[in-house]
Image 1 (cartoon, helix red, strand yellow):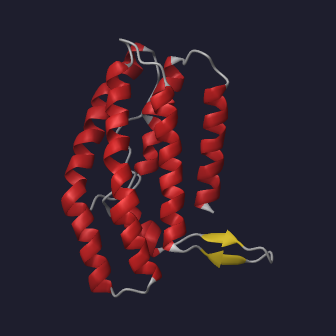
Image 2 (cartoon, rainbow, N blue to C red):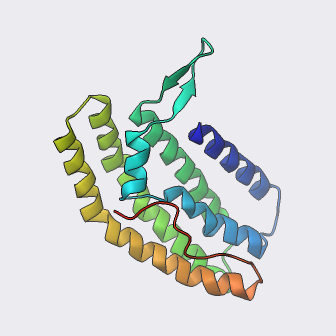
Image 3 (cartoon, rainbow, N blue to C red):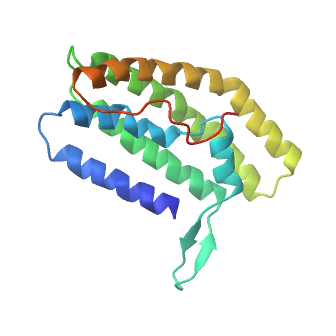
Length: 181
């Protein structure tokens, strides 16, 4: 269900982004900063929770079925790729350069991990791997990528705060939506 809502929200963002010639500061902030919330839980407990508690999907017969972990990861990859492409299409200026570059760097850091390590983790789940193997895969992702993710995320926030302030965009920062690893 979460994937359906997420896909719908991204579709709205794409339609909105293609309907405007010049991006407003609010749109730039939304696309470059807020849309990175799609990565919330990366290399931490948030993504683990999603995989351990998969959503359900509608079936052709009108019922529901649990999503495979591969479907979850593929949906996550598509959502992040769409947001990344939208951010890359924004026109860079002296005013927004820092926030756009920080956002793009964050996307470019996480996407390969979703495509490889998280995809492999999903395959482990879908093949009924044991808890020790799953735990080792989670730990490897956290050990290899969490620090880099935090650094890039902090750079984006450091660029986003003054950008939002310059343009009068009201934002509540430091809201925790998922636990750290």
